Length: 181
Image 1 (cartoon, helix red, strand yellow):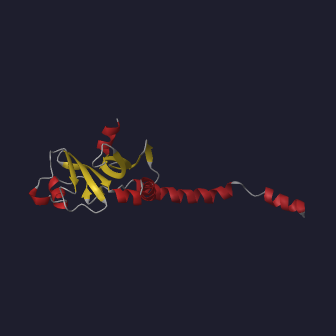
Image 2: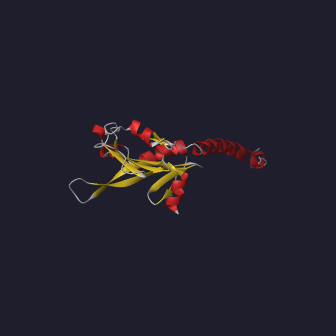
Image 3: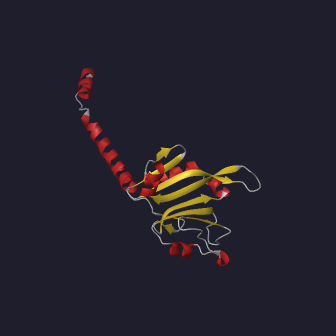
């Protein structure tokens, strides 16, 4: 009887248990690839490709002050606009050919402590899949858009030092490729 059991187990094909495992793996990988092809093109209520007028409408300046200090770059902080969400310290924008090509938010100190970089990377990984990494920057990209998470140095008021705060950035793929070359 004992020899019979050994024989039964030895005849079991090896390839069968691998097929269900490969099938399950394929089912898990396909949604991750599909998610990676659809990175959100908006951040802080601003969508890439928007006109300067749409940005002005989303973040109207306080007391008639002009937000735009040039056609290429712009910074929105609590001093310049009253509509910034509570968890965001400042928003940095970049325009290309009159259209929004880059949105970067730097979170408040409390928000950076409550949701540190590692936690935000995990959350983004669940949505977009495994990130690529360059130094301490984590990024996800598709054919048109790049989403980056990193810690940005922010000057400490009344000091010459800086502190690191969590920052998120959405930008056009062309701008990202030009930046990394």
